[in-house]
Length: 452
Image (tube, rainbow, N blue to C red; front, side, top):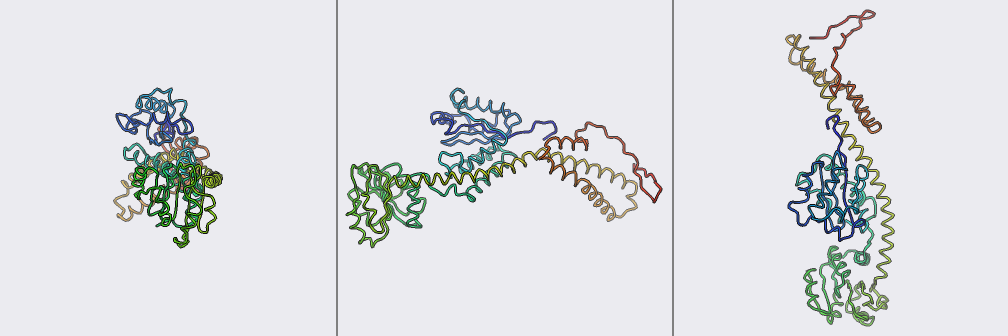
């Protein structure tokens, strides 16, 4: 960055599930735009780098700008015009962050500390996809590239150094976690889905991701059973066939609207001997319950209803909140490191300029000297003098450069400004001829004229 030019800052403008209802979020989906959002954003005059993140829970623009407040106003106008809505619809829902606060927000989003479900993993993948799109459109540069790489590193640290993602906080996922505790490994296990409740469907999806090999769907309406079975790549069954399937499956998820029990104590007791006492796990998410509570008294049979699962969820949510405190500490540590790098961008050009000026002086003075005595020297001697002068320059510059790097984060632009004046990098001071060199010989002094 040239001297005197305004330093670009990281900023973020957006809204999420906490600040805006779904009715507002869905109106900012850029669904009917003339061009992709990134193409529109890159045309804005005050934006230098930009990433656009849009999910069902948030719409955010991460950008760099030398005038972030003015850039934010441009983005608001773009939101309105591209989505054909008025600014009044969404403006009160927006949050605008810059500097450390913007960096902290991005780190927290990637680490799932700002999600509707604390610790859920989907947002990190969505953020990576947003970054990939920005890279493909070439709307990122040095600053946002470094920010995203650091963001993904922070998210990984949070997941590996805390237990924020290891405790189920949804009913369906809690059911699957309980099944894993009973069976250890769900690979190769089979499941029976009774009814078509939403939570049962979600539990079935979690079971498949954990390696369950086959799902059978039984429903009062057979056509609905066929539809769900196709979705889970399983097979449909009628409710009358449930007793036969209880002989074969390992896990039963039930969520019908039946007024009474559809699976009884006597029914399950009678199948355990033919099953050779293989464990049978029931997840009863129905209200009223589908499975007679006494079934849980049978050896190797485990029944969990929705209240059991809610208890697990609440305990796990509390545990996740404790882990979130550890995650916040990691994020604060990484913010300091990243911001030190970001601020250091100011000092890097100055260091390069100092080195370049010193090298220019070295080459010029060496050329003058060799013009006088070059014919008397062999190529090896000329090379030795070249190495010597490089070494002298490097040693002279070593301490000032280390001082600049170490003190910059304490004194900021003051140190950079002082260094630029000392080395006359701004061209403000005319170069004055240096006095002659003086070499001491014992007690006598002898002046030596400079070459040229």
